[in-house]
Image (tube, rainbow, N blue to C red; front, side, top):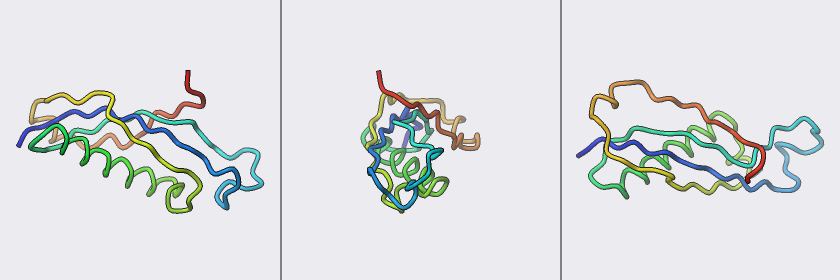
Amino acid sequence: MKCYYVLVHGRLDWDAVSPATENRADAFRPAGFLCHRYVLASTVYTAQEVAFRRVRENLDRRTGWLTAKAARLQLEAEETVQAPIFKLLKPDNRGHTFYDEEN
């Protein structure tokens, strides 16, 4: 097992009318986000899958967008590299850097 750093890019495809954002002009509906995770895994592919699961669960726990079916989420690994094992000792940075429009 190795420690991997996975930079995750998430794209959000919003439902035109959803109960979570219906009739709310101020509803926060970003186009996507970036975040990272340090994970313990045996392969790069497994590291990406573990990071995706953790990101998906955390995003839904914080926002409820996925459970409410307000948005569909597509995840991709922008970068996956082996990292020093001590990085796993740090608490997860569970934040997301959201953006409004893709360039």
